[in-house]
Structure formats: C-alpha cells, structure tokens
Image (cartoon, rainbow, N blue to C red; front, side):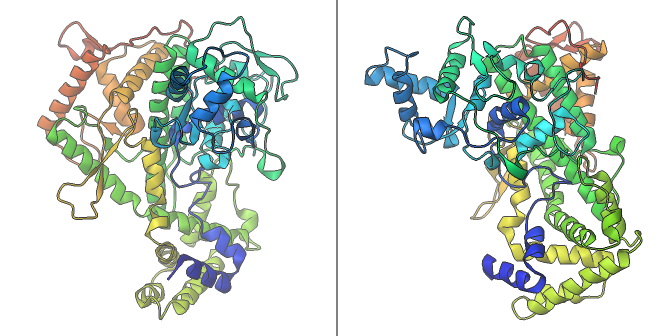
Length: 589
C-alpha cells in the first residue's frame, strides 16, 4: 500500500493529531536530533552562531548577495569586484580564487571541485563562517547543532539562555562567546563594536594577522554585512534537550574541553579542523551506540541502567587501516552484530511514542509523567513502568493500546493478513505494545525503518578521511549488493584520540601510557583494539597482531615514545605542544 494510503487510513482510524505524533521517526527524549541522514561535517558554523546569539538561526543574506543556488563562480565574481580584492581580472586568476574558496571556505555536494555547482555549506575556517547561512534552512542540519550546544552548555532550564557573567563554564552562551573554548581558536581579529545582540556588532580588526583562508572567509562575511537574523516565535529558543546517554555525553563535553584547552591555540588551523571532525565522529558515534544499548535494555527490562552502568555497543577498530584481511574481517563481523542489534530500534522508538502519546492524553497519568527535558531518563523509565503495568493507572492505557492494535488488525485484515494475525494473537499487554509498534514500523516501510542507520552512518562520518567507518559491498553478496560497514582506524581518528589522551593525562597529572590509552578506548567509547568486545571472542593471535599494528602506526605518526619494551615505558606523546594551563574551567567532567 502506498505511503499516503496507510497514513490516510491511520488518520481516519485515530485522528490527525495521533497520526502526526506517532508516524515520525523521532523521539527527542531519547535522541535530541532528527533520526535521518545529516552532514556532520557541516554543523560547526551553525554551532558558532548558536553560541554567539543563543537563538536558532534564521535566513541570512547569502542568497541575496551571491544569488539563489550560488556557485563558486558567482561568489568569485562578487568577491573579485569588492574593494578588498583586486588583481583577479582574468580567467586564470579567478579560477585560482575559486580553487582557494572551494579548498578552504566553501564546499559543494559530495565535495565536488566544479565551480558551476551550487554551494552546499561553509567550512568552519573562521568564526565569520557563521554569517553564511549555509544551508539556508538550519533545520536541514537535523537539530544536531542545537543538540551539541545543549550538551556543551550543560544548563538546567528548559531552553538555552545567555550565560551569567559570574558563572564559570568552558562553553558560555551569548555575550561571553569570546571565552568559549570551541570558538576561541576561530576568533582571530574579531572585535565587538556595539550591543552584544546586534547582528552587525562583530567586526574584523584590519590590523590583525590572519591566514589567507581566514582572510577569504572574513571577506565573504563582510560582503553580507551582518549575521543572519535569529528565528522568531516559538521555534526561536534552543531547546535544552540532552542525549539520553548521559555518561558518554558528559565524557564528550569533558573530552572537547580538555582537547581545546590543550591544543586550541597551539595546533595549526588545518590540523585542528581535521581533528575536530574526528572528535565529532567519535562523540556522536558513541552517543548513538550508547543510546542504542540503553533502548535495547529498556525494551527487555522496562528500565534504563543507571548513568555509571551505561555502556556503548562495542566496535572493533582495525589498526591495520583495512590492509590486513583477518583484522578487516573481524571489524566487519563486530560491526554487523551492532547493526543487527540496532534493527529493533525503530520499533522501540515507536513504542515510546505510543506510550508517551497515550500518557499525555490520560487524565491521571499525564500529571505523573516526568518531564522529558533536559534529561529524558525518568520519563522513559516511567513509560517502561506503564508498559509493564507497574504504574498506577497503567491498565487503562494498555487497554487503549490493545484496542488500537485490534482496530489496526481489522483495517489491514484483507491487505496484510499476516500483520493482522500478529496483532490479534494471544500475548501479554506489554508484548501487545511492542507488536503494535512493530506493525506500525512495517506499515511505514523499509526506507523509513532505515533512518536510524542513515544517522548512524552520518555520525560515523562513513567513507570520510576522519571517519570511523567505510562501506564496502559484502563479499559474495548478490545484486543488489548488501553494504558492509568496516571500522578501520584512520590516521585522523588515531591522531585525535592520541592527542586527547595526552591532554587528559596532563589534567590528571598522570603518565599517558599506551596501556591506559587502550583501556580508555574500550571503557569510554566501546572501541576495542587489543581485547575482544563483550559477547565476542577474537583469537589472542589476532588481538596481539592488532596491537602491534597500532604501535607501529603510532610510531609512524610520531605519537609513541618508548625507551624499553616494558609496557609502563610505552607512552603516548603529542606532536603539538600542550598549552600550559590545561586545568578544567568548569570542573573536570
């Protein structure tokens, strides 16, 4: 049946409000961003804007100044005619300027180098990238920037507010944006001339020394004359919704604080940008795999584990970077297990939406329903109690969902008798909720059910030089080939993780040992290198081989110092100097 058909039928059965609330893939109390594909590498300019103005970004002047669906050629034409650029008068010089812009400031879809292709995003070369409203609709970034700001700001209220003047924090919002550790490396030459909330207050000090890529971004922003206007109305505030996976969310915040405090002012800009992409991939992937693990436990037990007991689904990182067949096969096998376990998540999220909707419309239960923000832990546990009949008044809600299941079965009896049989079979009320959820996921179709994996691939930065995974056609697969995700440990990710480990060790005033590094990868992120992931058994020979490969890679990258073969004498070292003051600003996290 066509998608419009099943939506229309469910609307006729239960009303438009119910249909619209249920037939979405999202559930912010569990996952604060939209569950679908997103360009993770494109989010930082919008994050800069959110921290600066404390409101969601609206439309700016990029299309007005450079044209709708502007190309690099159009941007070059406008830039070359400005008072700050001269000498770009012929085809060769303008081609060179276009190459510089596409190399350092702007990017086309799929990183195409064509100068006649529409520009898709701005690179975070400088703070003024936040003045370029790319993509034009900030909602196209699927609320990932808003989630990151809420996670880093770590505020208690329902929406993100400007940070008070006397509150110590590494990631302040609003007028104190110049103190923000994430923004500071990108603020070269930025001055504030006017009220903090003015869209034109941020100016460039012409006497400041900046690199050519920064200068180009500054000139692009200068042509726009102001930052984009914030959204207005009920969609303007940044909702303070943090990830359900609280342990790794706190770890991500502490990691970024330690990394930026240590290297924000000492790393070359290009290296810092590359490692920040790896940092986003590591943080977002771990949040997603931890959330998956939590939801799977909730489906089994009706309760979420305590914060200290939360763990991510494990991944096996191939330290040969895909060159060793045995290690490559092992990484694919462990990833396949993780993907297989995540196949149940669309139905679990559907069950949460069903329970949440019914609880919000129940005269008794709605007053007991805990808030879903900024932390959804208590709300989801309460919904688990309802599902298992442990909450007062739960039986009435479960009866209502059973009635809906029977009505769906009746409506699809002729079109899908197998689905109808599943919904009407004898089962417990708790199982009936999950069966109804699975039926609704089935009606939505495989494409909608696959949105979780789209988001997962985005968080992994799949097939990206600083990503955690690559996709390959599975060996022996028939057409259409099934994609297999492999997890080679790329240089970019290894570089970030090693530098982060040195920064964390400096804060703890402890040696940055290789053994401690391997333990931290497993315990903090679920990244296994020299140990078998939980639930799997890899041979000791394979694990030893992977560790040896890792040590060789670290040496090649200048990240390992060892004065003997003793494990305690094998130390991770940084290639760039660690800033003198690396103590935490807002606590050690």
